[in-house]
Image 1 (spheres, rainbow, N blue to C red):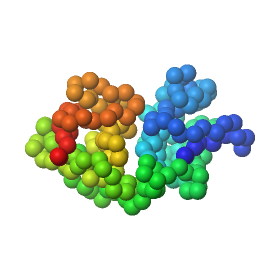
Image 2 (image 1 turned 180 degrees about the horizontal axis):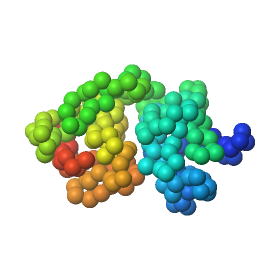
Image 3 (image 1 turned 45 degrees about the vertical axis):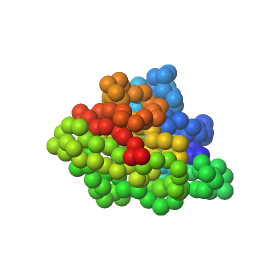
Length: 225
């Protein structure tokens, strides 16, 4: 399991395992990681973890978020990356493979998955590393776009992670797991709609013919059985 090591002026303050799919960081008490300092915004940033991948998103904070000395809006975290929030630092660490639990069926995930973009309903080239699950009994599935310029187009959900939305507006991920397909919010001030109701920060399992709305575009999830 990945973790964040919080420190200030070289002094380690806390180790924080990334146990939830979405962990918020900020000054206010409701955050998963609270840093009570005026240089930190009330809701400063968030880390979204799906399988072995973690993404850091700055939530339009006043003073910004840095990774390895560079300002970021959204960043794919790599082992050893140092997140800077004012005077505080958080080092992202992946557990060695020998310490990781086998994934689902006893095998570790391998290979890579491209990140498709909703506006094109296709697979553009992505540069971030990502992981493919071994074969599993989960039935094949797809989404069909119900609105927008690509209405009627289908996107097959054959990858471990399928990213949908518009960066900077609203982004969500559909994760293909051995026990089903799950929708998780990744980026944006508002959450995607599932059958007309906003989801929360936790992953939501998708059922056949669920209607999803992301970044103003509606789509239907369906199983291909």
